[in-house]
Image (cartoon, rainbow, N blue to C red):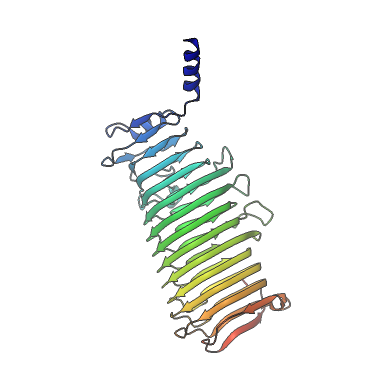
Length: 391
């Protein structure tokens, strides 16, 4: 009997069993979530929708399923939900923001994730005044965010990104080892499906779609940082991106040098103004890109201020482009393979290489192979020297 009692006690202590709690539609959602015990599973009736007027703080590892919630009109300066515990899981949800009812300075994401080990899947986010999900360490704690998954998410008409992955400050805390896959965004004209910025590292992004957005995927920093800060974006892997009627498929808005180890493979830009702009991204590999019916007469693939660049299998079909299909600005040690201009393109130049007068090392460190640029109306490859910094 004593042996049985001892074994039962050990089972209770070591048991990973969790309590299943049905969320009550008539009770305050914030109270129910914040009072839930660690490792419990909270299940919502999909016919219920809660209106949230105070931020929900998740401070224990819990699982939430089937939640439908809306941030109250005019509620600013707080997200709908702040995840402040490791091991958070949420699936099969819909969050609605209050875009247009709060001032610009009061915008916040629907979900702010501040700790790692999370899994957020099968959700819809619409009308956020800022991002759908922001993955960023909290200023007051400065823990790194290590590990996490966002998957099978759709965003509609959010003011900024569906998902933003970012560090805090100039490297005081970073977000790393994050997986983002099967994300779609529609009608987000200021931003797009996903951005990686300000010190995020070891990020794996795949199966991204954007329609009527500013971009599908972006690599960014903010110009208040210095080149010796820790705000660099490093080791980012992006694959299988489709952008339809966007300003860019892939975009970077970088101000500091030092970003690097960026691999982008499998991009289709359909009727976008421009296909790719990547600035200050060293050790860059861009491959398997198809530009279909580009809507801007300027360069479609623009790579600037970078070293150790590989461009491979870049193809152009149709469009109104009349400048250069690819421009390399202040790029050193670049290899370009397998660029093709379709017969229905109208570019003056296939590839333009720009370098400042007196700094033409870029010209001698380029390698071209297996290119088909005969459709260029003026010149297949143009070398252009100019005065200035090349920006």
